[in-house]
Image (tube, rainbow over all chains, first blue to last red; front, side, top):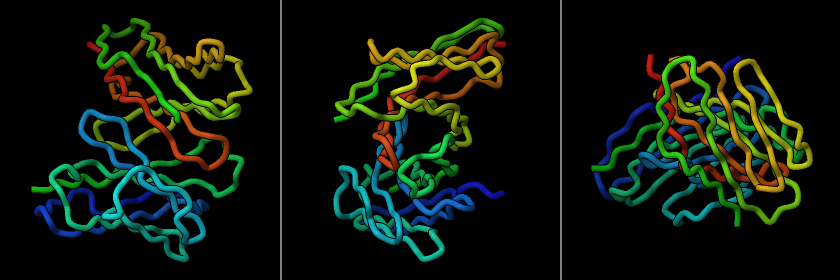
Amino acid sequence: DAGVTQSPTHLIKTRGQQVTLRCSPKSGHDTVSWYQQALGQGPQFIFQYYEEEERQRGNFPDRFSGHQFPNYSSELNVNALLLGDSALYLCASSLGDPFLPLDGYTFGSGTRLTVV
Amino acid sequence: AQKVTQAQTEISVVEKEDVTLDCVYETRDTTYYLFWYKQPPSGELVFLIRRNSFDEQNEISGRYSWNFQKSTSSFNFTITASQVVDSAVYFCALSGYGNEKLTFGTGTRLTIIP
């Protein structure tokens, strides 16, 4: 049973460019959340997608946008990249049921984005 | 607003010693979840435990145990007889009831010295 898959693993972009990160949720999961983890910090919630709609959003600017597809996979887009956007971007999947299953959220290994 | 504090930035212990990782949280919710995750160098967050706010029973899983005390808003994690494979960054996290966002602490880097 495949867990959460993220691509690419590593990415280097130039300041001002745009980037798209991809996530395939764990089999059976329908909800995808994205987190940003700066070096030495805990992950920070960006947003969550359920039924192809953004359901919750953290304190991130509009440069951060996302999408969820009918097969539950998701993309995270970041426009006008800043040096401060350099981080590990983690995707987590879960079931949309309000009563969270025992194992909660399943995380992928992340995409390491470096902005130069 | 929710907040999780992990005051211990780094801990080093010699293999086979016991070690406790502290976690203190703040929330206005009456029902919530608490989590511990392990992050090895590969980057993936590995789920260790989820606790419901209404269940204060402590839990043991092999060498791992968790002490949840609602009165002090703490959810501490103890590794007994530590092993080198336990070396990682450990995160405590909090969420509202349901599919709510996770609020993480800043993590504790645990190094087990052979």
